[in-house]
Length: 392
Image (cartoon, rainbow, N blue to C red; front, side, top):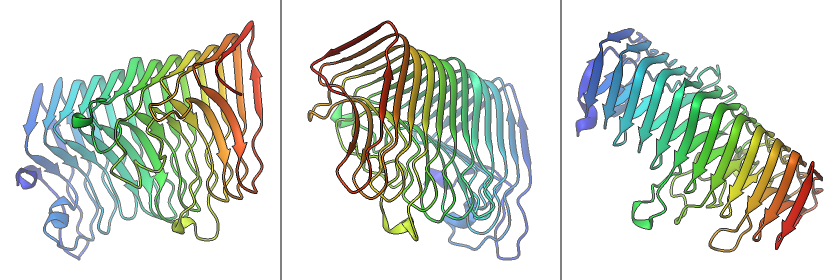
């Protein structure tokens, strides 16, 4: 198994609590294939050994960094705190199920990437936290491109709050998956945060970029299934374009499959489950400020509740808002906040300086099929409002 070949290992193993060492790697070009760098308990996890210590910090400075079927790991997943993982490079490429991980049983580490171009294919970044919280994933650069089930996730399974996800791309940020059923990844590409267990809150997701694109079932998702609150989503962009759907269901959960829709979209929901304990948390708000936003081919923005928690508010401020189409099975695309249990639905507020168009079966919907109240809908269409074969 190439996954246990270590290029560098300064990690920790054993029950006595010794910590992993820090690692700094400086080079013009770094190419790692089928190998790992470990500063935490990755060896212990794969050897079924105890490890009470924390992971060391890992810092990489390079002109180019290429990871192929490889991983950079600072975990303290068994009993300690994760180290911080910092990458500074002009170009970073990750492919063939490569990974970055800063997961901590007590406290998560931070993942920080500074790069002009970040190209991620069939690979993952994760920061998972314990009761002390911490963690989080930050990208600052020009272009971020995620394809074929490439995910960025920050989650909690205890009383600690998940670390925030912050992406700043000065040119574009894209998440794209194949719509060929033979090539559909088991999980959608995107940014994910959730409260899996416990009462900690999901992370805040912040995106700032001229162009944000989500296609082929890709998503930004801050859904919760516990007593912790769902994460808030805040997007500032010149243009937001969301379109299409997955041809097959999501096979991997709970982090990636809590929002059951196949449609590309932005989701912040609260979902009833046995992990809600004394009560389910509220869904977080979704806020988007942009010049134009288009939802096509059944894609959706959804902050519904199927629990006792309140659905999240959706607030869109743009010059032009365009919603069109349905997914293949006929479900409408658009803006949704539904209440199907005792929780109340959130509100939807669309504010356009120039134009709102809703067409081809799309919908703006605030509904209730349970005892909880439906949310309100407010649309300020600016200069013009057009609706064809669609509904509010």
